[in-house]
Amino acid sequence: MGILEKIAQVEAEIARTQKNKATEYHLGLLKAKLAKYRTQLMEPQGKTSAKGEGFDVMKSGDARVALIGFPSVGKSTLLNTVTKTHSESASYEFTTLTCIPGVIDYNGANIQLLDLPGIIEGASQGKGRGRQVIAVARTADMVVMMLDATKGDIQKKLLEKELESVGLRLNKPRPNIYFKPKKGGGLSFNSTCALTMCNEKLIQTILHEYKIFNAEVLFREDCSADDFIDVISDNRVYLPCLYVYNKIDQISIEEVDRIAHQPHCIVISCELKLNLDYFLEKLWEYLGLICVYTKRRGEQPDFQDGIIMRRDCSVEHVCHAIHRSIASSFKYSLVWGTSVKYNPQRVGLLHTMKHEDVIQIVKK
Image (cartoon, rainbow, N blue to C red; front, side):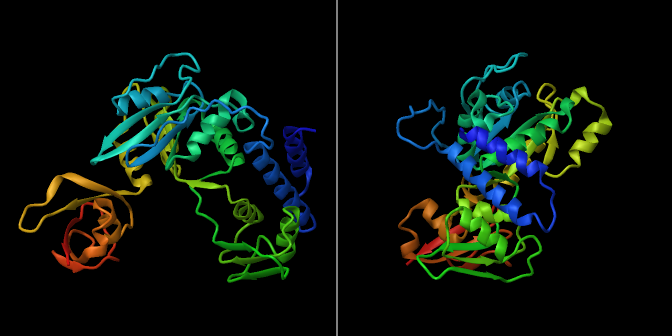
């Protein structure tokens, strides 16, 4: 029996098992089995298999965004509209057959946007080059899920299911669980809060399925068995995701209003160029980028060439971005902007910078 048949068998058993207190251990065991089989599917065993033809492109710019969606939803049209790159777009499906990179220039940052081929149902099992598309998405900083507004929420649910099955977790925080396998001593289980979704026996059952008998487990928040399986697997990727509904010019204003009020969703029309500026704003916000300007002593700040950093970065990170030797000879820095109480304020290496702050570094 192949891995796909095993996965189908376990999924069928989960579907027909009633969810109650008596079956929770059995369900936990089945979920652990399913996660193991899916990991084997993503990383084929054996050295005889030929190397697959991937289409990953070199990472460039300040951030990388993967554009994922079903065929003919407007991914290439969006790339052509917001970047200077040309990607072939037509009214038939599978116009794009390889990965086409483009660069969005926004707030002084170069954001790499990858136009990936359309994926179909069953992509996580390798259908229609789906595995290569998802492999590229795992290397991105963020996923933009392109959806057809005329199809309702069907596409969103199908794509979420495909990405979930290959270990991509969208808009979810990493579970606050400490897990460390040990050489001996059995299972040490503790929690700092009341657990309502799992207990020590269930955790032990899941660990036995992974052939782990000695480990230290600490739950710092109330998590489910699925979250614990994600922690054990250690190959999950947690990414922010923006659901972009295209073709809003073909649906009613009530439907547009309903979609626009859903969490993490925005509505656009590539054909009529509607709401694209708001799309770029949300992209910047979800990537968590900030721009920091530098200033020399006795001169005006350089507002032409800012340094693009991640949100909540410290003065030390800014020093490393300018040159790696600056932090070692750092004395203090003067900061102007929203991160300080008065302008300029003298701060140290641990001070957290904010968007559009100006920094002057003084060396020893």
